[in-house]
Amino acid sequence: MSEKQHDIISDEFNEDSSFEFQREDDSASEHIAAPKYSYWGSVFRRFFSNKIAIIMLVIALTLVLFAFIQPMFSGYDPMRTPNINNKSMHYLRPFTTKGFIFGTDDKGNSLFDALWSGTRNSLIVALGATFITETIGIIIGMFWGYSKKMDVIMLEVYNVLSNIPTMLIAMILVYALGGGIPQLIFALCVTTWVGTAYFIRVQVMIIRDREYNLASRCLGTPTPKIILNNILPYLISVIITSVSRDIPLFISTEVALSFMGVGLSQDKASLGRMVQTYAAYMTTASYLFWIPVVTSAILSVSLYIVGQALADASDPRTHMI
Amino acid sequence: MANNDREVLVKVKNVDITFFNGKRPFKAVKNANFEIYKGETFGLVGESGSGKTTIGRAIIRLNQISGGEIWYKDLRIDGKLSKKDRQYVVRNIQMIFQDPAASLNERATIDYCISEGLYNFHLYKDEEERVRKVDEALNSVGLLPEHKSRYPHEFSGGQRQRVGIARAMIMEPELIIADEPISALDVSIRAQVLNLMNKFKEERGLSYMFIAHDLSVVRYFADRIAVIHNGNIVEIAPSVELFRNPLHPYTHSLLQAVPIPDPQIEKNKTIQQYVETEAEQNYDKAELVEILPEHFVLMTENEREGYERKAAALK
Image (cartoon, rainbow over all chains, first blue to last red; front, side, top):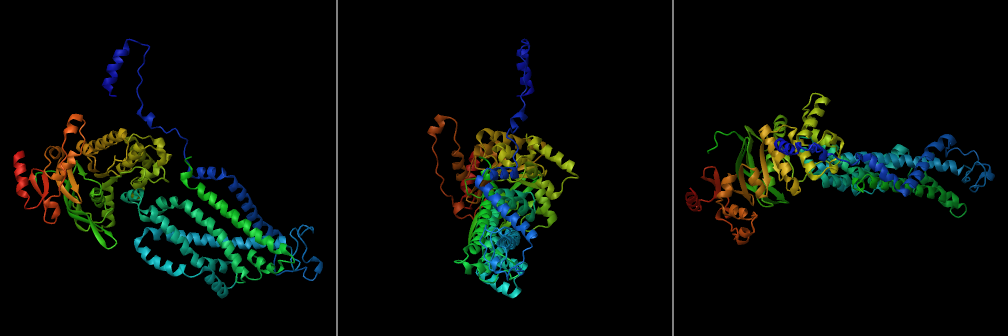
């Protein structure tokens, strides 16, 4: 309403002093009453509203913490076998002897200590391999998806690398390089990154030509900045999905490699090596076999479910409800 | 040409734009010729898929052209440019997008969305000046500084489009390419956005290239209108002239499609079906001819006589 109209109307009402003219405030209609939105706040609210996810998170955290803390106190070393000549200490059943919660193995070593030491090494390999695979995969996948020139070259690289069986190349590399933890991580990462990169490439291609990216180009935003600010935030959810798939995958790959005898070397405990050595006692002392198998399964499943719940929670489409 | 006294901002000269579907080429725009003068609103109308947006995006360098030239003032802006020239073009030509929901980064705050251009060219001395500029830009489009920490999905369609306008305006451009800026908006807020665009035009002497398919809006908003059909510009004229004396049969049928808010007239209106002209069948032989002052029509040599007769009758 213009000033003039205000005056005319207010003149008419001037005689009646019980009325007062109210000016309209345009800015009031622009006010947003909804509480402030915060992305990570909503992610955590969403995640912690999922009861199964919380239970699995507690299980996974307990296992991970135990695996990293317990070996510091036990100082377990598979090469040290103080009870090897004391036959009465061999094959103690679980929960029967004080100090040996999970009993002892064929050499009289505590299975409890061996288990956590093995879990720790398996976790280091899985987490290390996941970290390297994802970092290389994401960085290369981002540029691969964005640049059409790079796509031509990278597709050929992908066709070659993805056709080499991961298991085969890991076995050959561990044979050639030796069975240390860094060597195993390298052997696991050397071809798997290309799969992650391909996955990210497809996701980038889906959102590459959306209008808001064109708008950024119109504003003169350089490509690396578009990738970092416009595309990466949209991929958080798929990246978490990919990570939560990779960790259990690497745990089981490590187990499988050690089971075949080409994983970590003899002087390092690992879940896979335990499963391999104790498989012989399936009938006579089955707890030796089942405890590491079940631990590996619980670890993989809980990490996977936590990852999936986090991936769901980090998708903003689930925040609006 | 009658407009020699007016400064030409953008000159589009014999522009072809070709897309490739695999190996098969598809010409989206054929031999486009027009000029945008400083301070005017140049409307580009046509049906869906006629190449309107493609031309707009070619001017802002999002689409590459396969022939012809595009000039911005004295600078040829098609093809590869040096970094300095590229920045010059970005700062002076900006775009408002069709869908305000799709053209804002959902994961960035309004503060970042609006400052993006400032960051890219470092158009501020210190943080304080950047904040001041963003606040001013928000104010000028009727939004509040408190919106800066919000995300685009928290806004209504009209508010989002105003964010899009603020983002373009903060660069202080000379030309804005508005690609159907109101077609995704609710009817009740279309006027709000158009009035805002007009306000900027008056205050800052902006020029617009207004791409639309809604003729009633273009009539209200544009000074000159070009009609495009299947990638060919068939007619260019000042908007009053175009609506009064449409010469090309396609323009004629397009204008007839505008509903008239009178049931009597609307009922008795006879719609003329558009029949392909000779010019369109041999578009490589046809060219834009100034048949009346400032009124251009696409025609072949054979058709010329007929158009001249029509034009003479109008005089």
